[in-house]
Image 1 (cartoon, rainbow, N blue to C red):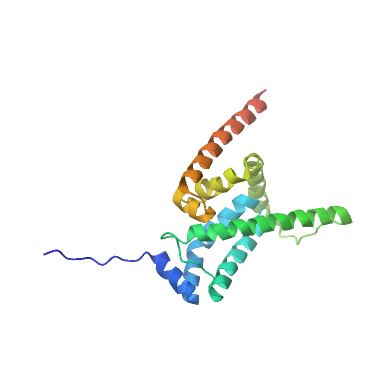
Image 2 (cartoon, helix red, strand yellow):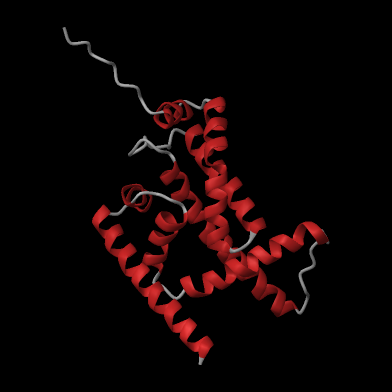
Amino acid sequence: MNTVVPSVEPLDLRLWDLVRQEDEHAFAQLYDMYAKPVYNFAFRRLASWSAAEEVVQSAFTTVWRRARVGDLPPLQRDSALPYFLGVAGRECDNAARGRNRATALARKSRFDLVEADHADAVAARVDDEAQMSEVLAIVRRLPQRQRDVLELVAWSGLSTAQAADALGLPEGTVKSRLSRARSQLRDMIGDRRGSVHD
């Protein structure tokens, strides 16, 4: 006699469906699961801890607002991370534009932007941001399409299928862009090492 084992819906799908029904507890669980990966993604993209914190808040606020107005789509796969990273990517773009505008305004007005002194706490972040800025200087030489794929797959650990969902692209396109990005990065890093030793 064959026993039929009922399929168990993945946790993300259950929570996502509850969030779509405006369940705050389910949303809090998704936040606990994905705030850190979204934060890491945003930091790697912006090389700024404070901007990454703002992106996390904006991304999760956007998802919750969409749920409240009935505009949150069902998940395409069994993980909500690609959706959160897709929203976070757009928030990163907004943050970068805002930072560029603020920098231009400061230059134009000849006033320096002054921030509060948090000495020791800030020192470690500055080092991290400096290192990430060096990495970004290389990565930013890639075309935007390749950077998007690299950030999602190599930095955030999404599968190519999940990255395809986050970007709204066919998986084959994601794979080819990732391959080209990795190849170009190897060439750029090789060129940089060669010029350091010359």
